[in-house]
Image (tube, rainbow over all chains, first blue to last red; front, side, top):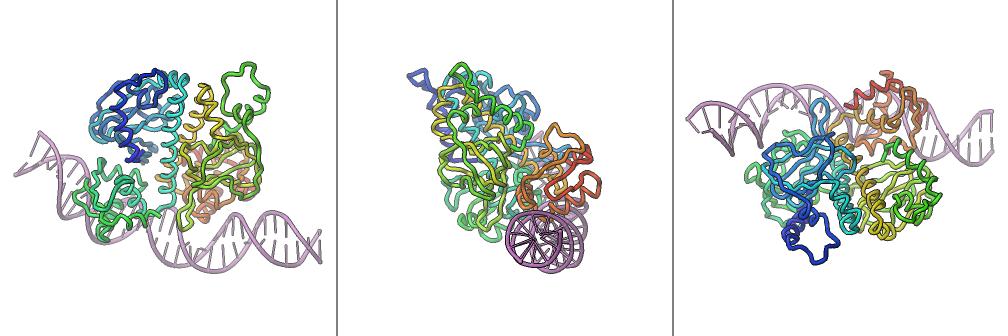
Length: 230
Length: 230
DNA sequence: CGATTCATTGACTAGAATCAAATACCGTGG
DNA sequence: CCACGGTATTTGATTCTAGTCAATGAATCG
């Protein structure tokens, strides 16, 4: 999640698999979605699935962006990850979803029955390996995020976030389009909306970034951000 | 990880698989370790593997306890999870370990070559499903932990920790044996050692727990802890 | 153009971190 | 068995980062 480079690859791969490979044999997860999946549209803030619901489907973002989150009883929210086109979600094993998922803006999502994917995976080593790899990728994202939430300062969190959003391949001067609002960013970074806003302003003051509009950020000093990112 | 009930099940399952199942077919991950794995002992604080090292093996804790962690350049540490007997670790896909792993106390670990497990999994639907399930279990633990790190107060974090350590089946009056020191707990919960200590003392003051010794805690008011856990 | 939502800024507070010291614990050797 | 040294833990005083409360400003949409 959140790895834009990988997301781009996955997106690029998606259409190519519409040309079915000659052999009926090995498929990857994206190809399995093409075979078994259907599409569905969601409006801004619409729930895709809820925590505790039976986990019937796997999902792949086609367009737009998705957030997954957990709530405490008093409404405090932690966003676990943002999902961009190509990313898979709902891969957690277990009969029930451990997170809720919502559309950030209007978006399209491919979905496929878990049982179908799993049945196919049981017979297809490549597919099962890809399912595992996708899950493990989520796990690594979560582990990286634990370090951020447990040990980084507000400024370091925002810098990490911006660098992740700008992608690995990004260069100084790149303009980042943020699909999510400040509250989403705050709940993702374990901060308040005010702290996120102040930190953006402060980073602009040090010429690390430029706030073109609230949803558009230009990276002006990439290595400065990376230094903050430790 | 950290799910003592599940850990106990895994441990219980382990010896039973020494009796090879009649059919050579499906195996679970624990059985695969029995077939392919070897054992190794580690001393207190000894490194099992390091972040960035090639991920050659999968591991399963046999006795003792293991911590996985990441460091920032200035030494700040985030412990991602504690692993108890029966738990698997090192399941992250990718050529390199994303975390470091160390023995908390003297411990024994089963290990098996990744390539062997993966080869076997490619031909064995049950094994590959179990590999995926074990990875997904780690993922759910990580997601739960993100909520703790991002949104819970110090008292809530410590209460969550104690409830997790006491196991799902625990009852009031249960005595928890903590295998790790205060610094490990602090780095796991995203707090300082002083805050952990003060919170323990405060929970004792409210009769929620009793500190028998620094490594032994008795739960006196389980529902009180659960209320804090939200 | 007004209404509403979202973002920024300011003043003040609080919860956890930091700095510092005292106490408890543990293994070793006399 | 007890004294010693080293480590781990607890406790206290103070600071500081981020949170809270409050108000203003900007953007978006009928």
